[in-house]
Image (cartoon, rainbow, N blue to C red; front, side, top):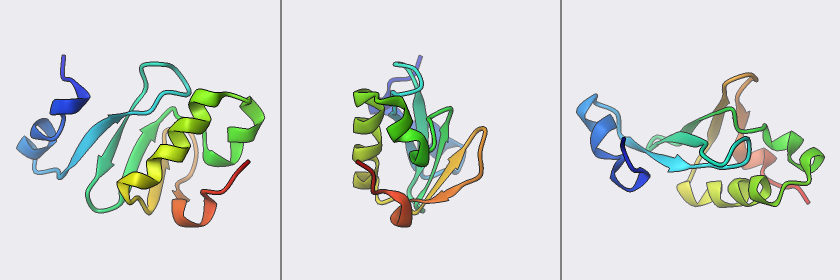
Length: 91
């Protein structure tokens, strides 16, 4: 098992510059691959437009923490990608 804290080395061995981060919300053990180039593959994390529908504080906190990674594009497993700079505002 690979911890998120040590997750830069594994993708680097594959020529990928990025890290795996914890992104709970869909499930408590959800993770996402965040690339240094500004993209993130968030898997089953609910799209940002759906966050208010779930009334889930963990999901909301995950989305509030993602901008700290300087992301531009979010790629979902079951949806199209989003430009995070124009969509990261919800209440």
